[in-house]
Amino acid sequence: MTTRTRREMVHFRHPFRLKGIDRQLAPGAYEIITDEELIEGLSFPCFRRVATMIMVPGAPPHRSAMEMISISSIDLSDAQRIDASAPA
Image (cartoon, rainbow, N blue to C red):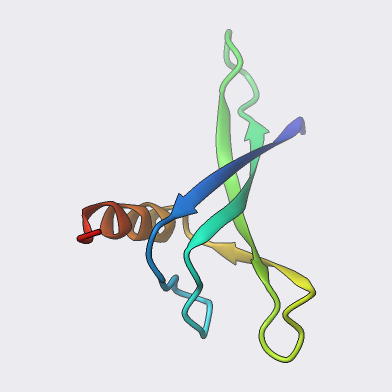
């Protein structure tokens, strides 16, 4: 099975929450890591998402550490939409 990993940065202007993370996250830039696997048997390359993770600062008192937490891509999209529509 062929897999690939995509990395991107997303930016939040306001504090936000994601399901699976038991604390509010601060505004700022966050790295999103998406693992995808090749769908075999097609005449063209096509990948499907199998995992989405976000890198966040560790919970107090371990703020200098980073945590990679598995999240739903739908929950991430919802958080980005809410952040974009919030008043400045």
